View 1 (cartoon, rainbow, N blue to C red):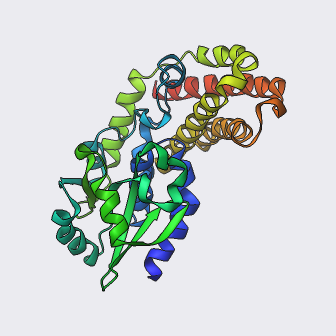
View 2 (view 1 turned 90 degrees about the vertical axis):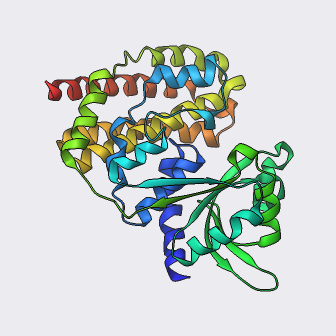
Length: 311
């Protein structure tokens, strides 16, 4: 189990950054691919999300944060950019999937599966909703009381009884019931193709950043009612800018651009931290508004520098 324990430590350390941008499944897949040596930072060429798009999803449309469709890796075919083939297989019940799952686990391939929270103790907060969540299955322990080694990074890594897994698997929505795994046989990096993808994205990208002015205006009036929405907004800003800085670094862009993107991420991270860990009445709104002003200025300069470099 040493390999899996190492993976657990690695993913628990790095997972938070992906989780603040991707949904649970893509965050898990990216963390897993990294643990397998796939240079995932190259995927992040288009993670600099438009602020208005994020705001409209959370506030205007009042949509679930985890249903936000990121620009990056929004389709499974996007993983092919680095030669990773994502394989999806649907099964009506666990018993029809078990043989294939065990076979893949024995070969060292981990499985991703949507499980119903209702039966899983550490997901107790979500039980009443009977909602479902992505889990990574790493290993199978046969026996009279068979178990699977399951991970929900970064909060859980351990054994789950086969009985619990079967109930959780079979209670997931039919369209999601099954398993997903990554075929890593064709992993490769094509720098020219990556730069072409980045250039194509940058040509179509624009953001006047007026959303930050809207957020500054609304924050004093709506913080009590919408603290969670503001928190999710800055979580996505934090995660997306950080991952974008990783792409710039991986592609050997000037360090000034890498640092500029990281600084934007850092300001959003600071705002997100306060919104996540403070009661609304304890938050210094004036300080937060000043941070947002600084963030808007830094992002304006970043976008200008990116567009100028392209020219």
